[in-house]
Length: 288
Image (cartoon, rainbow, N blue to C red; front, side, top):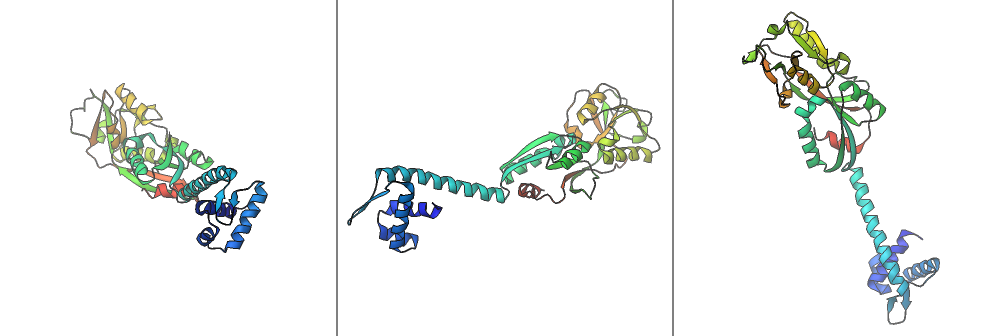
């Protein structure tokens, strides 16, 4: 049994006239009659009652018609979904992001994705840059938002956001009333910083910024997540140089100040595996 045999049957069932059905199917009437008889033989029951004057569906034919029409509806749905998948309009992406991205680019990314490809679902994982590189290499995530630089031989990447640095201070710090803070005035402070291996690009920019004004920061405590760093500032463990968008993280006991000095521009990049052939990923990348 072939799909065309079922199409012949449905058309004849709708027309109940071999001549009209044959014309609609663009075939001659004798071959249509022959194909219907072959189908009945294969099925083992009669689909139509035929007389010289009319053609009628048998009781079995009426039941068979309902089921075959359901098959064609499912087939149309399968074709529709297949086309959506082939165009990257439906599917899932597993996405990693550094914690600070939640305070700048991530909300817009989620909104733009919903607007552009609403049937693509995103599975989000908050990860450090170092963790994202490992997860991306092992296939656990499809795309990430990291602090560059990254290995250009292994990954494709694109910088999508840049910002300046700011200083997070305890709210009762002696510099809290100043409009802007000179970095040099913090040379004797204890700093809270993350381990370098987690995001070496951002780490090196912070250290270099301090060295440009003549000191290396004294690290009192290390923490992995930006939220933890800010909480330690609130606990008066030290001060922290952070991306300026972290001001969107409202934390009692912490104030943020801009620097007098011009700060380096710190970036967030979107990153994915080289030669990734995912159509859904291609559609996602079009958002940027």
